[in-house]
Image (cartoon, rainbow over all chains, first blue to last red; front, side, top):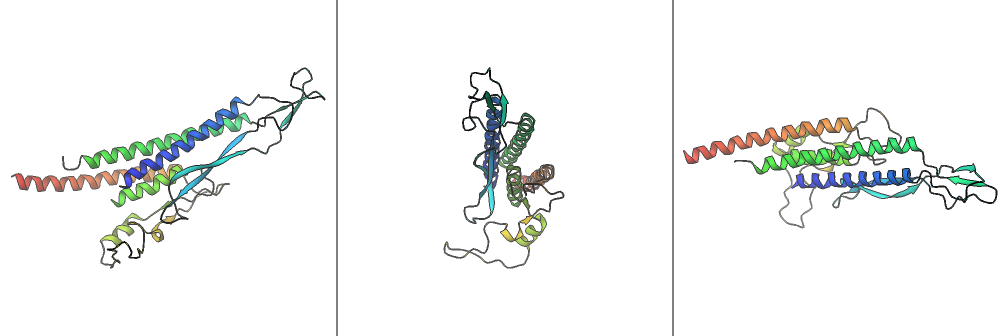
Length: 137
Length: 114
């Protein structure tokens, strides 16, 4: 039945958007995690989405979406002079993560809207399925 | 059940609304319906080793790509509003088909029971 497949597709969409929200939350929570070296500093993360391919016809997208991985942002870190900070290096500098709050907020709203969209699809598919079950009654 | 197939294609478009490089797809419902109900002969596959000319009721050749009305940086061509409207329209027509079928079944039942 292809309507069951719609529910699966919507579920993959919801789970992908959920992971994206999770990453946004992690970025925002770590926006002020300073450290004393570039390597140790938290870098903003971004999810990479990929379309699921058809089993019979590889190369054709069908069946939803999946997370292909998470990449770290390459934006430069913020170097700040703060000699009073216990984490400052020997020159008195600390490193702040390259998390852009405005960008994260926009990403969060986009993820939440996409999630709602997929919920709506799943709801409609469920209604259609129930209507089909009631056929002839 | 072609309506269910179209709903599936549209649901896939919406799930991939944020996938870079994903191209939205759809098919012309009437064209596929005419192809299924028309006089054009179809190759029958009655054994598992017969070669199928297409997978499912809608072959890949008839699944067209949407033409985006504005370009996007990541190459994605899903327009969420457009897909939502198409999905809602398809769901209504699915229910209309169900209603017709329901009427037919009820008519037959009345004829049987008297």
